[in-house]
Image 1 (spheres, rainbow, N blue to C red):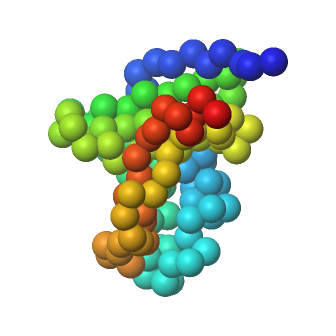
Image 2 (cartoon, rainbow, N blue to C red):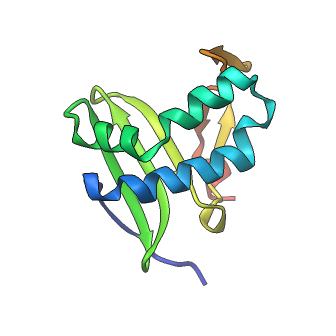
Length: 123
């Protein structure tokens, strides 16, 4: 049975929960291949005080998905056009994204350009 998540704009009060989700997912899926510099850089950017600064900023727009009281996901854009965060808890993962380019690196942080495809998401 599929669950329904409530989606709402995030507030500064969500900073600790967002930080915890992003940090846990990064440690599980992302930073294992990073250099020490990249790992420290990314995890520091996910710290609750840093999240609170972004949430209070007019530059970012955050939304959270909640399944009952649990945080199911976080999405954020910067500057009204750049998707900078898209994290989904392991219990809710099944998005239809696929790689559209080679691995890239910035400040020791590795990332892959991704694109959402409806034919993958529906299948």
